[in-house]
Image 1: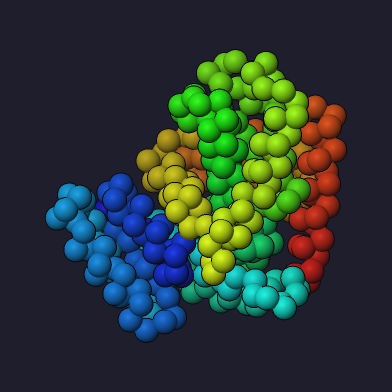
Image 2: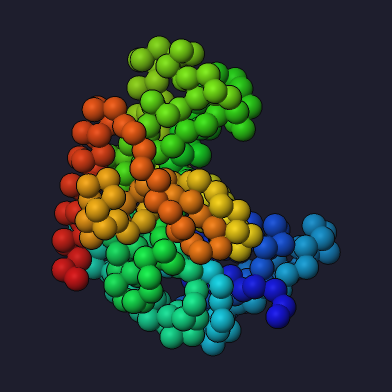
Length: 309
């Protein structure tokens, strides 16, 4: 049988960091695929040389084609271009739609039983592309956004309250963007509601910072975007599937009526295990949260319609 295999498509910062986190956790053998000659091979070899130091034993290989990806259990798609100055949102959507569609075809042909985790942006729309192109069941095609957004939210709360980050229970739903919905009513610190520890004003500030979490990093870096936490979030999803952890986490899932939404990829809480998305969890929201969720859904639906698929 041997070890399971994770393929990471795209060997840029996010992809290479996915390979790094996955290898360091001894999760699976890793194949790093990128169109740039030598780059995935060089990064894979560099990671292999870290094995004696950190004591992990998986194999990491780099490739410019998809032959080495055959029989992958999990495929993480980070390929796609970031939005460049002067580029319209439509340009970005069409370029990345073509990239993700091409990648998905290659993957589906060689790993027909794989689970696909999409990280490429615009996230919810790119999940939709991978789902339609692969023809896989919806439980095997999902997007990484909610775990990252929730991690940012939990991190900011822990920083504010000066508590261990493990104690912060929280959930961020909705589309991956400015309309995401941090569910304040479901946020607690070891069972103590956040609303009893912070004023409404401070909570709103943390919610706003969470929504702009990615943008804050882009503004600081000036030449790129976040990659440590996004990669960690994608690898946590892969780990939940490979180890059948039955984690309750928010992911972008294809909805067929849940939350009153249809034919849409959207961030909702799910049980993630060996079957992929094993269950979508309905969450009781306040009226205000419900309104925010609908606003977020409308934005995601517009992007989906822009795909013309």
